[in-house]
Image (cartoon, rainbow, N blue to C red; front, top):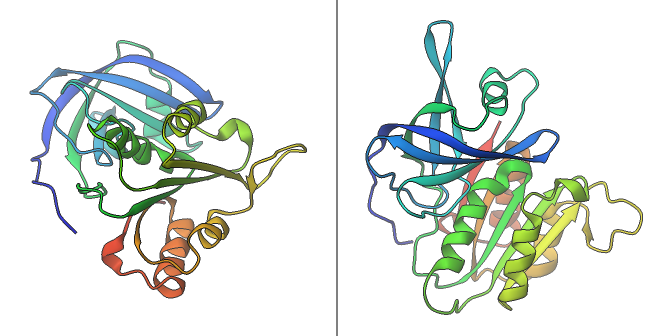
Length: 245
């Protein structure tokens, strides 16, 4: 699998330009670099956010939820964790707040050229880096020559983060297949139900000519990786992943 050139991480400050509530516990943040050189990153990488606590700094990693744009602006998406100091600090911020950051970090990226079908599997805010990857793919010049699938597992319809955006991409590109799947579907739900692993088996049964990108909680990621390796026979180089505790 081709690799991309290493981007050295840097220390910088970013100002919060806009914050949007996606669900009662999840927010979308739009940032702009205000102190430091232009921010270079690959879609799928993460940043370390440093917030003040008791006279020092406490840091947490968060995936960048956007494709590279102008070297200054980028998005994040995160949950408010009930007992999490940093997530609560960030979720309580208002526009124009400034936060110290370090990055980019990580190797959870799509390496061009795209030479096989791709399947992205996400649950919850694991969609953040994948949103960036998809944006990078669909913003690239030329027509995509392979199919791209997004299997996104959540509990309820209202927690399908960035749903309209993914539906718009699916409407614009016949090669993009968006499959939200609900583990707790309401009456009348017409889409997929159950867990992401089941739909992987439905779509790719008997195939091993694709690459998979998986992001979400550890249990889901581990189970999908096991399924792809043991049931499908994929080589480990065909599987990229990022998992959260």
